Amino acid sequence: MNYMLPQAHARLSPRCAGCPARERAPCGAMRDEASVGALERLHAPLRHLLAGEAVFDQGDPSDRSYTVVSGWVAISRTTFDGAATILRFALPGDVVPFERHARNASASCVAVGPATVCGLNRSRQEQLERDHPEYDARHRVEQGRILALAYEQLAALAMGSAKARVAHLLWELASRSLRRRPLPSDQIPVPLNQVQIGLATSLTPIHVSRTLRALRAEGLLELKGRWLALHNPAAVERLSVASAETAALWA
Amino acid sequence: MNYMLPQAHARLSPRCAGCPARERAPCGAMRDEASVGALERLHAPLRHLLAGEAVFDQGDPSDRSYTVVSGWVAISRTTFDGAATILRFALPGDVVPFERHARNASASCVAVGPATVCGLNRSRQEQLERDHPEYDARHRVEQGRILALAYEQLAALAMGSAKARVAHLLWELASRSLRRRPLPSDQIPVPLNQVQIGLATSLTPIHVSRTLRALRAEGLLELKGRWLALHNPAAVERLSVASAETAALWA
DNA sequence: CGTCCGTTTGAGCTTAATCAACGGACGTGG
DNA sequence: CCACGTCCGTTGATTAAGCTCAAACGGACG
Image 1 (cartoon, each protein chain N blue to C red):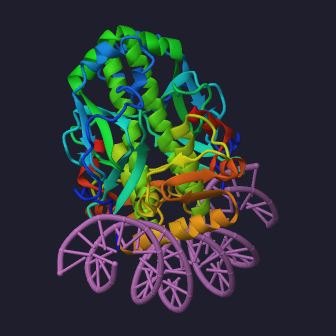
Image 2 (tube, helix red, strand yellow):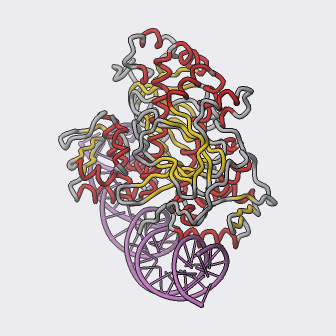
C-alpha cells in the first residue's frame, strides 16, 4: 500500500570512481568567499553515496550539517506505519542543516542518485559562526530559504490539483537547478523516477504517470528518461507558482 | 469557491482596552533571561490587534520580526486567484521572524482573535544577535523549531485522511498551547472557527464539520464554543503524530 | 424581531486511490 | 544467443474520499 524510497543496491550504480568534479564547492553558502579554502579544512572529507544510500536516518543523532557537492539528496520522513513523504530535495550547493532544537533527526536524508556530500560537525559550525560573520550571515539566509521552500511546498500541496502539484515540483526543481527561469530550449537533468515524484507531491505513481501524460498532451512539459523540458515555461509557472512573492526564491 | 480569512470588523471584537496582562514576555526566545528588561527597550511598543487585523501583508517589506504577546496569529498565504492557506499559527511567546532571503514577505500575518504583538526591527535584531550570544543561540533554536513545525505540517497534509489532519492540527495546537502533553481533563482554549481549521488543514469547512462530528462520535475529542477537550489524548496522538521524533517538538 | 455568521445536513459529482494486469528496458545466467 | 527476472512506466476498471451546490438552522447581536 505504501510506496517507499528505493534502498541502496550495489548493482544499481557502480561505486563512484574517485572524486567527481565539484559542481560547487562544499559549504554552499560560502562559495563566493575568498576563504573557502581555509573553511574547507574544517569539513570532514567528502562522502560518496550510492543511489538510495542514506546520509543519515530519521532518529539518528543530529549533530552535523551536510552540504551537497554533487547529485541530489531527498529529505524524507517515514511514519510509523511505513508511509514516506519527501519533504524537500537538496541540490548541489544546498545545505542540510542539523536540527538545533532536537537531539535526533526528524527526517532521513537519502541520495536520489549517486551523490557526494560533505559534513560539518556542530562544534565546527559553531566555530565558523563565531569567527566568520560573513559565513554566519549567509548561513542564516540559507536557513530562511529552506523555510521558504517548505512553505512553498505546503502551499503547493494545499493548492491542490495533481497537475498543479506536479507542475510546481518540476518548475521548482528546474529553476533551482538552473538558478534562473527555465527556457523552452533547456534540457534539465531531473534524476527522479515517478515513485519519487509521487512521494514529493503526495500522489500515487499511477496518478503521477497520468498527470505527466496530461501535461505532455497540453504541450506544457515533457519528462522522459531523466531529462525534463519545459516547452511552455510561462504556462507551467502560471499553473504552479502561487504568487509573485515566491518567484524571487529561485534566484 | 475559495474560503477566505475573515477581515477585521470593528464589531467583531471591542478594541483591546489597554495592555492585557502579558502571558509571556515579548521576545519569547528570551523569556528566561535576566536581561529581558534591557532587551525590551529595543522593542517597538506593543501593538494591539483586532480579530482579522493584519500584522503585515504578503508583499509588504519584511524588515521586522514579531513576538506574539497574547492571542493567536495566523501566517497565511494567498494565491493570485484568491485561495488562502494557513501555513502555521503563532501562539503567545512564538516568534514570527522576518525573511532574510527576500525583501518582501511571502505570507501575511493576521490576528485570529484580539491579539498583541511586539515588533523588533531588523537592525535592532542584528544588534541583539551580535551583542547577546545567548539571545542569538535561542533565536537560532527557535528558527529550527519553526522549520520543524513546517515539516510536521507537510507530513500531516501528505499523510492523509481528513480525520488525521484535523486531529493532528488540534493535537499540535493543544500541546503547544499547554507546553505539555494534553490530559483528558484539560479544557484548552482554541480560538478558531471551522473555516480557519479548514484553511490550516486544506479541507472545506463543510468537511471539517463532518470530520469533527466523526471524531466526536468516536470519543476522541470535542470542540465546542472555542474550547477543545481531548477525551482520548493517546488515540489522538496515535492518529496524528507521524513518528517518535516529532513528539519532542512540543516540549 | 430580524439579520448575519458560523455550522450542519443532504445529494450529486469529481478527483485521485486502489486493484490488477501488461509491456518495455535492462541486466543476469544459461 | 536467448530465456528469465526485475524495475519502471502505462493502462483499464472500480471504489472511495472529499468537493460543490443548495438549503436550513441556531445563536449572537442590533
